[in-house]
Image 1: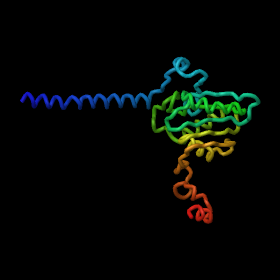
Image 2 (image 1 turned 180 degrees about the vertical axis):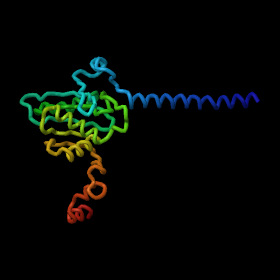
Image 3 (image 1 turned 60 degrees about the vertical axis):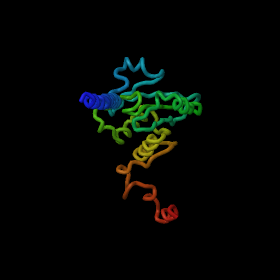
Image 4 (image 1 turned 90 degrees about the horizontal axis):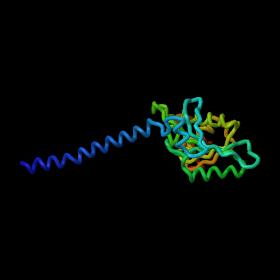
Amino acid sequence: ARRLRGTVHGAQRPAAVSVLSALATVLLVRALLFKPLIAEDAQFAATVPEGVELWTLATGSRVAIRSFPALGAPRNTPVIFLHGGPGGYSVALLPTVAAISRLREDGYDVHIYDQVGGGLSSRLDDITQYTLARHLEDLEQVRARSGAKSVVLVGSSWGASLAANYMAQYPAHVAAAVVSGAAPIHYKAWSDTGHGGLDERMTPDARAGFRA
């Protein structure tokens, strides 16, 4: 009987550990999703990399951004870099910052920011507010605050999809775009007849040639 009780107790110990591990995981995920990495401006100044600012946008989003002024005579179309995700980051990603900021050598002002909900930017209390429309309006606010009428967008992965959707909504505000690993543009927002695929925007002859 003692062996049986010992076996039962021994089997329960891993279960208890699993419960504690699961609880710790839930608490960690909750902290990352709902709590900003920077709680106050005073902590922000002491925590983030040098040169990063916190912009409060008209949408209510507070985004961490780092700007690099052009070297020499500046062009009138600054570069805005859009990271992947959603939920990724770029401001503290040193290889990305080093690579994109080199565009200043070609006369571009360069802006690199963490989208709301990611990196050093604020988190939203209501997770249902993390929408394409919110990210598009945040990007439009960043564009407006840069003072430029049109910009060059550089986007990777989800950032490339965000760039495509922004171009569809604000075509006059995009001078050029460089995208890498883009997913399709948002189906519900831009679908004409079905799923917003490329072939839906082709003429019948072009579609036939494309599928041949």
